[in-house]
Structures are given as structure tokens and as C-alpha cells.
Image 1 (cartoon, rainbow, N blue to C red):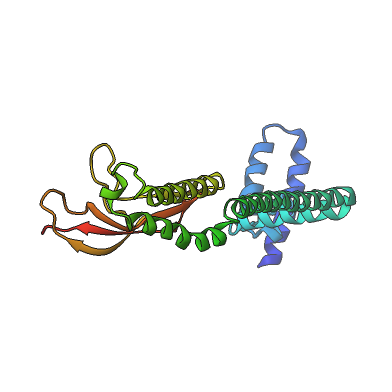
Image 2 (tube, helix red, strand yellow):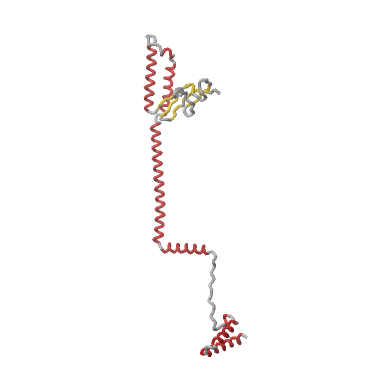
Length: 250
């Protein structure tokens, strides 16, 4: 059957070639040839053009393929361009060196500040231990002056009390000179029982040490009513807190 069809196809082709000079018969032969060719598969159509081959592409993972292609191109460019690779390494090295330099500068400045603070502290509190050893002697001056009754100190100077008054004056002068000398080096004494602007001082745990509490109708709770021993500060730092009695009416 296929041989017969091919034979008919060949005869139709010859008839088409023979009638090429006749314009009236050409369309009929061409239509007949086309109809016969349409009945055959593509592989058995000798005069029909073969269909163009189509290529199929996968649309999956296009983004990954593009990224992989870019990375591959970058790797190839890096391998092909040693100057660029060396430049990148130098830039990375410069960044690391700059970071190390900034860290070193910051550490050096911190060391300078710590050293300065330590030197200031050593300068300001160098006599702290020496000052603590003198506090008991200063307290003894206060005890000696308080041992003399107030009425004897306020009495007129006579031959009977002249020696006593001279002794008291000498103790006061010695105490004043000692305190002025210590004050030049930053040591100062404070008395919580002294009033400030006509009011009693409030108890401050940073400055005072409460030894007892007692009611007082003329004072408020928390007021310092009595000082057993005065306090001392060395350049603003409390060397010894003052021992006081505090009011507690409730």
C-alpha cells in the first residue's frame, strides 16, 4: 500500500513538472499533490518541507542557575585576574590592621586615665593611714578641754586660776595649730551637733554612726541630738564617721 502511494506521489510530481507551462492545470495538480502528501507521514513526504525542530528548555531553578552562573563567572574572573585578587587581600589586611590600631589606641587611653586616677588617689589619700593614727590624739584634746568646767573658764583671771586658764589656752592653741596643719593636707573635722541655718542636722548614714536613739520633744525624728565623737573627712572621703545620738519620738 505504501509503495502504491509513493508511486502515485511520483506520478503526481511528474504531472506537475510536465504541466508547469500550463497556468490553468498547475493549481489543480498542486492541490492534488498537497492532498496526497497530507495523507502520508512526515517521513514519507518527499516534497513537503520538514518541520523545524523545537528545543525544549526547563524553567525550573532559573534563579539558582543564574546565581550559579554568576558565581562561576566571578570565580573565573578572580582566577583570571590575579591583580584583583591581590588587591582584595591587601584591602582585607588594611582593614584588620586599622582595627588593631584603633583597639591599641583605645587601650592606651584607658591605661592613661587609670594611671591618672591612681596617681590622684595616691596623692590625695597618701596620709590617710597617718591621719587615722592622729584621730585619737585629737580626740584627747577635746576630752581635756571638756574636763574643765565651763564656769571656771568663764571666770575672771586671778592668781588662783591663772595656771589653769593658761593650760587651757595652750591646749586650744595646740589643737588649732594641729587642725590647721591637717586641713592643709585635706583632713577636716565635722561636728554633726552644730546647727545649719538654725536647724539640727539630719542623720546621714554616710557621715554618721548612730550609737543610741532617744526621744526629744523639741526636735524631729532623725535629728542629731548629741555627738559623742566628731567625724573626719580626707579630701571628701570619710575617714571616720561621727558617733551621734539620734532623735526618735515615735
